[in-house]
Length: 282
Image (cartoon, rainbow, N blue to C red; front, top):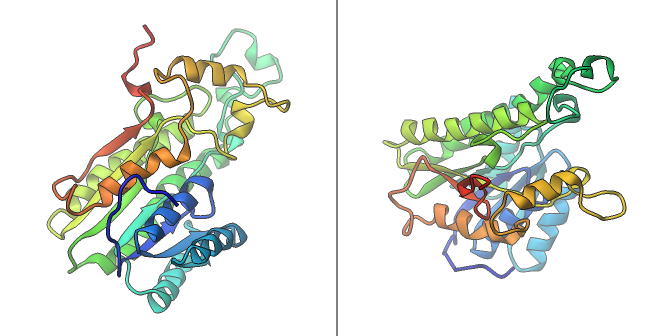
């Protein structure tokens, strides 16, 4: 993997949740390329194993673990395995998260007659779906942090990096639960930064703008490969006029984890969004 700049993570153990996904898998690869031993945690063990295999083929050290970040006992068991296999955690990337169709509306705006139109409105949002989204994003960050950050106590140069979203700044239409859950991640990042400030643990987050991934493919692209109307609106509101490339997140990630370049930075959420957050639409 080509990195935007080099940093030395030799001897460090990095734990990445959601590591079977496109973005978090790439984060794991970047950390391994810097010399870290990487534990890849994901509910989909096959996906995590595929990323681990790529890292090992490139000469890195990695191991995949099946982990349900909503199950404390499972996360604790993974912690024991990681500690035994690779050592104590120095870097935690809380990447597990996502949305669910049961927590999304079909239309952007409520209009008269929608209640009788046979579509899913705000009033039809499924409580279980909303709870799942909040749990996956917030509890799925809380539990790994509670369990793995204990390894960082009494050491120097340890980091926690959470994955927020531009939804946390301004909620997108149709996805109220996901937007609210990511806002909670940004707030939690600040809370953790203060809480661990005397323990020498820095806590930051990145907030990706719009990236085309497997998770949002159906929202952004029609079956024939043409852009959806939502894609048109996104690109019109992004001054750089394009989706981000996954690799463009690596620079921000490595910068925030760099204990020399970012030693006095904690509690921030870094937008990586092509100018989306700066544009008023006019």
